[in-house]
Length: 258
Ligand code: PAF
Image (cartoon, rainbow, N blue to C red; front, side, top):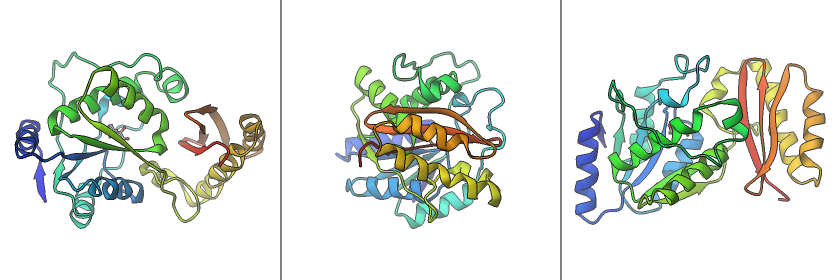
């Protein structure tokens, strides 16, 4: 596995791969890799093309007061996971932005509700870094999880609107043994918080089968101690939700009517 830190070296490798006729598949991540990321990598490998995993905690998608400083950074473990998963290139830049960086990608319709409402500027940060990663890796395919359903829609729209020559491949949510959607942020939960957190997917899954799903889930979640609902909404044929458990924000979704 090749380990690349310099963005320009990544771009040279991407261009070389394309010149050789390869169609690299990118799995963009912020590291702290878990089973959800491994499923994305597995899906990328099924393309039969070189697999590039990027690990970069993108400061642009964190708002003031969010967990940028605390976000888990586990580079050595990530490197070993990528090696074991058969990744061809691990791209882990120290930074992707020039000190006087002043160019952004803004999607202005799909970014505005749900997570975009409670995390202003988040999707501008995501869209900008994804555009940069696509340019740097020259990916022909990029794999994203349904866990971040709104991110997936925004990325698809940006790719369509700006004519990026890349195919976006979605992968279904991976869940831990207790049903909680795999997420790097799960490690913020204490054992006690986790026992409450697992009720969230249980309620959302049941709600997604009901015609009055959002209202029903709101009532169920309001009964849980220390839980605050950020949003419950149907989008992209899925019932999507975000909650706070004490100070930890969790998002999840289930296909409606399944
Ligand atoms: O989903 C994530 O981990 C991030 O939002 C992404 C797509 C890697 C961009 O930083």
